[in-house]
Image (cartoon, rainbow, N blue to C red; front, top):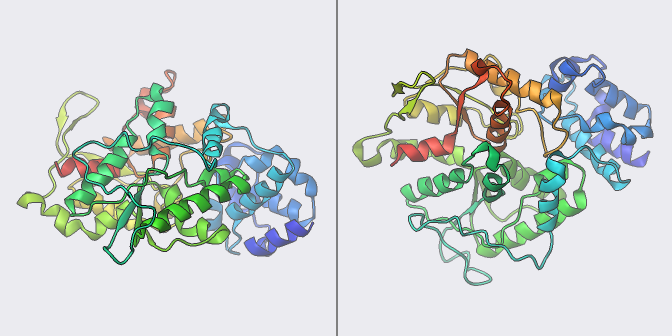
Length: 403
């Protein structure tokens, strides 16, 4: 019970009013009547230790909608995360998607002697700095480090979806180069550990965090740039909470682009060029109507809502907002490569339909997992064609405009 008491206190679960407003907005609860955040909190408050054996503990997709709706400031998503850590200690886990391959890759990265080939995707046109000495002098110059995360792995693993997730990393460097920045890229970087943390494996999360903190601090970088929302919240919030803070400012690529829009818009005196693509009827379309997917970790977790919209507006697109946007946005249906179920698929298809109903030609994302999950949902040959919509990453769009 001691661990429950600590979790209850830290997440303010004792303030629960039993009103059920969290349940009313929970994407899983809407589809699965057996799952309700309110009742899970109630069980813990009653001291029901058997909850650690309950499969429903792993149903939460940690989107944070319940926290936005809660009038008592109960941090339910963190409540679930901490309970999973306790459950993992006694050998309990959720159902891993893809046979647990992603989790296995993350745990492999905790090996101190691991040798990686993380830089073979870099092309000659991308100007970067590779740390050659063990420790750089942080006073020698002002360095920006680009933390790539797991982007190099996704295209190969999900080859059936014909993704180009690695283009996000290349686009990030192109934008930085355009701004006169040659970022540091670490050859011995590891996964940030986000998914291990949210699936309860706190021990291996800490190993990854300790490794990355040491490697980043060695470079002397003053800024760490990320293009993945999960890396962003992990480096900025979870590393200080569980291990130690970095000796650098953490910045998401959308923050940097928004801050530098005046310079980017004056690209060679021509400004952003309209992105030309082909709509579903096959006609060239140079004035796209777009809609935007707010990622949970970038939006509700980090309060970055306006910067992506400022960027979209600066590129000349007509933004058609989905009914549920910003703090009320619905997530991509699953989290941590775990418990990808029929409920997840229903959430994804409903969100795609909402995007399509805006009349937009393009769904813009700023999280690689949103793109993966939505494209996976659309790969089902049995879904309605009216649900399908073109998807592209925001960073990639910006880089294409600067060509």
